[in-house]
Image (cartoon, rainbow, N blue to C red; front, side):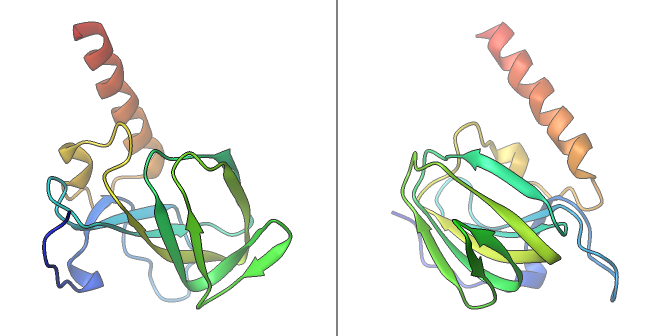
Length: 145
């Protein structure tokens, strides 16, 4: 169970990405709120316009609350104020709308493979660089273990 928690979005650490200038299109960003070791595991995520997110699943239950923009899930538009709940291991995918999307996601624990390194502040790190660094860490751990 996680500990009591109060936080402001502006204090979220950047897993990757950077603040979006006014009027600029959305980019892939991921911010963390909470405590990696003790929870809660809360994320503020942005995705670029018209992105297709292929079906995938996670090893933790999650609740998603759309803040801005939206996406289409199972043929239904999900815009600001929409709440979605996905049980662990449930396969889902979606297509981001023309304005991109920003949502708040809460999980019951850290994602499979997620580490304390992911929760450090990496403001300005592009998504592709973060993904490559994470893959290298996983590969090194597999060779060592």
